[in-house]
Amino acid sequence: MSLREFGPNELWFILLATRWTILLALIAFVGGGVLGMVIAAIRVAPSKYLRWLAAAYIQFFMGTPLLIQLFMAYYGSSLLGYRPDPWTAAAVTFCLNGAAFFGEIFRGAIEAIPKGQWEASTALGFRFIRTLRLVIVPQAVRLMLPPTVGFMVQIVKSTSVASLIGLTELARASVQVNTVTFEPVYVFGTASLIYFSLCWPLSLYASHLERKFAVGTVRKPETPLMMTA
Image (tube, helix red, strand yellow):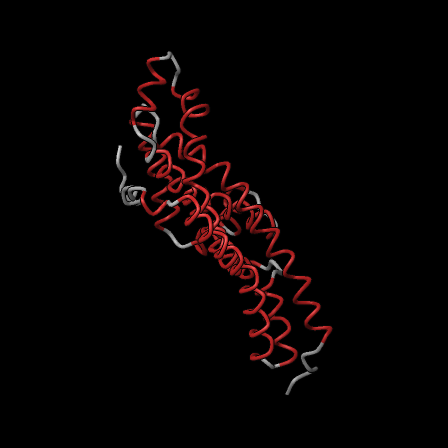
């Protein structure tokens, strides 16, 4: 027997919780994107040891469930004498996890640039970092954009796992409302529509960018989980 019916107040509570889903996704997008660019740079660095370390990082975060990573950040950090709040644990986990995927996206775009660009920069006396910053990345950006925006959809959907450590975002708010209304069709149907309204425009924009930049003609990068030097 329900304690109350699903109405405007319950809907407003879910909508308010959606802002935390959006904020967590933005944190993961920005933090993961910045760290992912560093990972990508290391993946194409001249040193094979640095490339191996970056590949190991990517393999770990892409090869283990996001939920386990989240639990390790939230509960496992207590072994070091520190217990983060749900927001900190979720933000750190999503940034680190997103960096692995962004790193592979960016690396694929960087390696799609003809090697002649690297050789010409070397002939002009440019070192690795300068070549990457001034020559390679500006050309690779157009190749990075479509998959980067597309991965944002995955980030938005995966924020729901943060509910399992007590972060009251869209998924957890929906569960809380359902426990007092016992109307799962209305509650989770509403949550599904909200997720769809967040993800669908991003999917459309990613498709638009893909058509605009014709990235379908670019060769596919090597398998992400291959730990190549």
